[in-house]
Picture 1: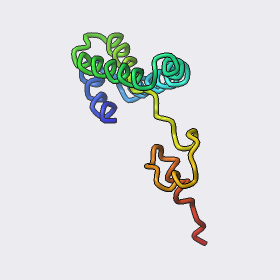
Picture 2: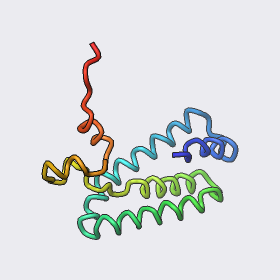
Picture 3: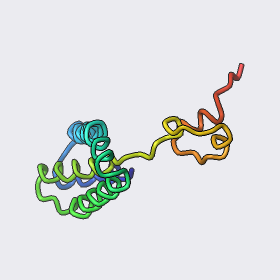
Length: 127
């Protein structure tokens, strides 16, 4: 995502964050994504459906990104970044591994996850 690339300039120029402190901001974003993806998204998906949760996440992320440049204080920036990270943690359509398919369908199904590539073209020894 391009956010991390451009955010470093905002963090440095407006909030005087050095590399160490900006690294802590990135760790915070990772923790938020892990917490939301691991603890909230699955429950909401079962209750509301994957589509509704994905739309909710995209809306949340879009709203937070729209307001992000106007963040007056670091605390507000961190809250908005938390909302962006939470919006990124949207449900992923079930991968081929979790969807039962007949053998004929497997060869024609589009790839739905990077792991699908490894199942289609398994690694071969070069030696």
